Length: 275
Image 1: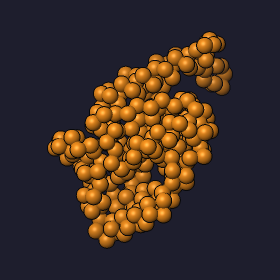
Image 2: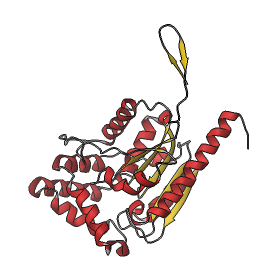
Image 3: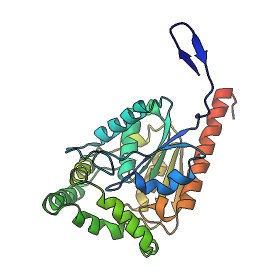
Image 4: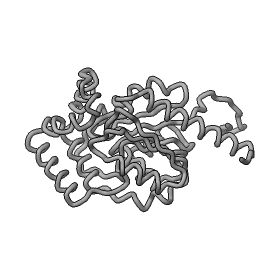
């Protein structure tokens, strides 16, 4: 790396050359859902996990939000952190919608994709009506009804018996602002169909899906796997919609393998090796 000064060019070395892994949380969660990844993956990557607008400790900004807005927020964060090299974007559920949108508009910033508990398709008319109903409920009664309705569906039945995990997830959801929840529901409702993007994805992609996902059927993950050229798929047993929390060891091992392959390919690429 070289840095330009007025009078000379200074060379320097920096050990912070790890690949950046950007973790994008789902709805209505925040970066705390990545606790086990922030702990365990820090030695293989520089892990950055934002709280999306209206979620966690980020400001609760009134909507409407859109996937484009979320993607631009993330691009702005990378600029702020001076991350110019391409990053691996890992998104769970709504975070996966954002990851696909981010790839569509910032392909040069993406080194790889990890699509977890997500789908490429847009909301059906029925799905959109459901979002509107949820928005009305949040406007009338706050975030509690949406949390109560979602919580049991987020995990595999076995995981749902783990009181500590259930309380942890509930607490995260309770931290989501009314504005954040309504804004995210609008963004999810109005998201574009990413199916046409899948065939254009030119970076290695890892699809991770819980075998017992009650929110997004595993068929959706299989469809993405078939449509993306450089895709691998890991099905996590005894996990639902939050495989990274329900089975963190399996999830993290899959991510580490993926990052190691990416870095090897990257080195080969730089060194002019050909397979």
